[in-house]
Length: 70
Image 1 (cartoon, rainbow, N blue to C red):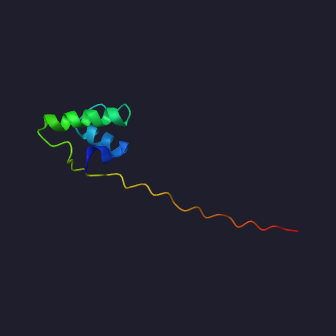
Image 2 (cartoon, rainbow, N blue to C red):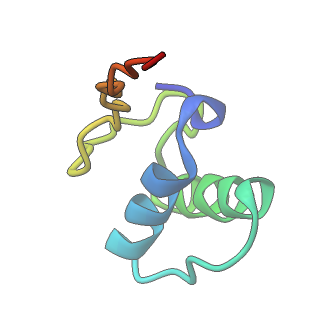
Image 3 (cartoon, helix red, strand yellow):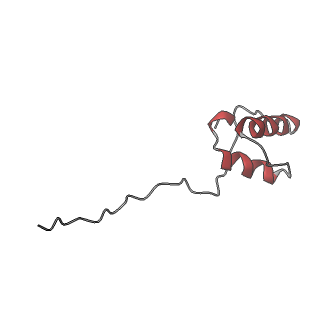
């Protein structure tokens, strides 16, 4: 995946693996991770992400049927 395609939670997970500070907004996290990957000799545009966090899917709400009583 491209670095810019990662979610904040994925960026933080990758930074945590490398023992790098995980504070800040998305652009700060992306820049930190980009620098770390370049230091490792990797290509920051093609990062292999092992996502431990499942993609969050919002459950459908089961609406209660309202009965209008006359």
